[in-house]
Image (cartoon, rainbow, N blue to C red; front, side):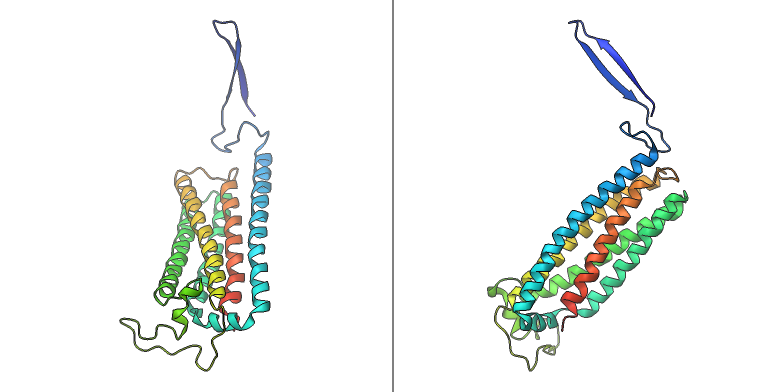
Length: 253
């Protein structure tokens, strides 16, 4: 680490220390690290600690899901039939593909492949936007049909809005089933868990856009690829959480 310390004496007689360092444009080594490897390892430890807190946070939600489903299994089986399994499956494929492009981007950065790195980051961002677009369509349908948290918003469950404007009469997915009480519990859990996950996807989009800007400038290379690696780890966790959410919410029947 190259650093110099200069001491300036003010007219009042007090000494002031001014610290200056020169950042290596190839390794982007910060002044408080001795080597690029130490900087990378510290960043890797930091992102893993952050991801552990994220896993613990979502674990609490999964526990709430398990408890409510244990005591109200009929609610979950009934209400889950109002979810669009096809859209959920497409979103699962989109996120899995985005994890591939994110991992590929890490490899591109390690091999100093600027063009491929930019392409894979763009693909990852495009997949993230596609995921959010599909969730927007799903949420719009739920809101239109009144499938929202709270007992006052369960009108769409008796039966679903079959004759919505512009739609032909839909087939009731719960035909022959008795409508259980407290159906809104399911949609409370559904919107909270998928909404929180969606917020993490949006945060990931912001991070990837920032990394895309830096990648276009050519800041990443074989000696400095940490930020891409950390973002990919975060994205894999976002993908993994959805892989659990999809069967628990969409396929429980």
